[in-house]
Structure formats: C-alpha cells, structure tokens
Amino acid sequence: MGVTSIRIADDLEKPLEVLSKKLDRSKNYLINQAIKEFLARQSLEDSRWQDTLEALESIKAGKSIDEEDVNAWLNSWGTNNRKSPPES
Image 1 (cartoon, one colour):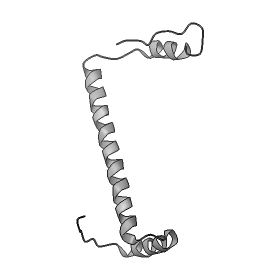
Image 2 (image 1 turned 30 degrees about the vertical axis):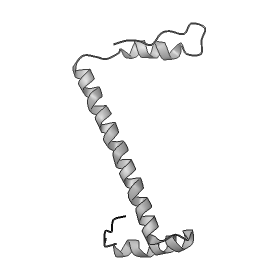
Image 3 (image 1 turned 90 degrees about the horizontal axis):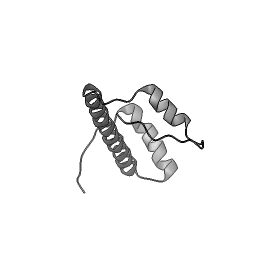
C-alpha cells in the first residue's frame, strides 16, 4: 500500500474526527473510502460522457428514430398488439 500525505482543511478535520469516532473507523479508512467513491463516480461520469459523444456522432451521421415511432412502440407495451422496436 502506498503512502500519501494530505492536508485537510480545518473545516473538514473536526467532522472527520467525529465521524471516525462515531463509526469506530480510522480517519485513514474514511479518507480511503471517500477517494474510492469519488474515483468510481468520476469513472461513471467519464463513461456517460463517452456515451454522450457517441450518441452525438450517431445523430450527426443521421442515425435517429422519430419520436412518434418510439412513442407508438412504447405505448404498445403491455398490449396484445406489441410492436417491434423502431429502427434507425
């Protein structure tokens, strides 16, 4: 495990200490958990951004589906006359 030194803002130190005692966990553990959650959230945001860029390229290439076709397909769900998904 690597060692990294950080400076914690004064307004974060006390709440971190309180939470550490409340959860019976070390400040180190809580900081590591916070970093893991932050990195996971950033990874998800990066993935969503890539999906957005791909969708925009798809639109630029003329690959889109008319809203009416999508709504007709969705409205057919749960009926005896379920439609096939619309294609671009």
